[in-house]
Amino acid sequence: MRLEVEDIQLGYDGTPVVCGLDFKLDAGEIGCLLGASGCGKTTALRAIAGFEPLDRGTIRIDGRVVSARDVRVAPERRGVGMVFQDHALFPHLTVEANIGFGIRRLDRAARRERIGELLALTGLSGLDKRYPHELSGGQQQRVALARALAPEPAVLLMDEPFSNLDTGLRRQMGDEIRSLLTSRGTATLLVTHDQQEAFALADRIGLMFNGRMLQWDTPYQLYHRPFCRYVAAFTGRGSYIRAEVDEAGIRHALGRSPLPGHIEAAPGDELELLIRPDDIRLDDDGCPARVIARQFQGADILYRLELPGGEQVGALFPSHDNHEPGRTIGITLDADHLVLFDPQQSAAIEGTA
Image (spheres, rainbow, N blue to C red):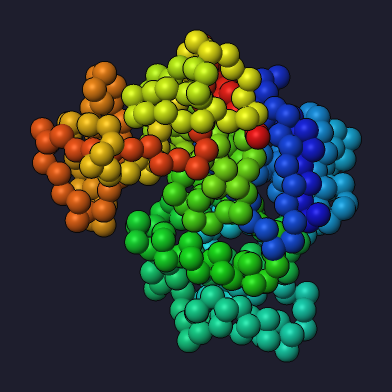
């Protein structure tokens, strides 16, 4: 393991900000701490970097303890690279000098070779003599990444790395950086509040709330098998409809579904079924649903549909399937597995199964 975070807790003035955080990252793996502002994700990143002491727990990098209650290795001795939200480039230094800042211990030839390699790797060849103010936002982001990678850190930390870039550039930079980091085998941890950014970049995501990690999982599992309602809401649109257990499975407004084998429920039990927009399919012979509203999204249209009993669900169809508000269409539920909740509880009944 390159990075091991074991049950860490830290805070300020006696108030915990991060509580019981626990996860691991292998070489070449990209992890993400995702959550709203104030959830503790940046504080956790700062603790891993060595800027904040721990009240409890252990942080290991390449098997070496770098933080514990009685251990605190200096940031520059941890083998960690850091990419800050505002890039934090030295304005008076050229691109070449910014990238080489952390490898001044190397001899001139080795240093020049490393800088040249990183310029090529990050698509900055030919820009080595420019200053930060002469670069675009995306180019500045690449310089910050190259500078962080120059010392060949065991772990790379990225704090809201794309927050200052426009949407199109974020997507482009995300694709480029993921490819680059994966090819180098660098264990990477980023923090962001942007769910789409996390899904695009990370192999594993930890969704945080009030200093605690609610779920550490793959993007697919977070979206399709959320542990609780908060995770379900944060990772994408969803609606809840009533469901009742009977002898044949589960009965709901969209028809019937088999009861998952790992769920213990008795006939007559009332549950709530999570419906994602992509769980709905058009079916002329299916449940009649009235179009309440629609939102054009280019390749897709997001619909708000009313079911016969008055419940409403979202549905995502290709934009070629153009249905006017007020029209009734047939739909069916097409989900690989069901996510069910007790109406009185926050946690999903299916848990991690």
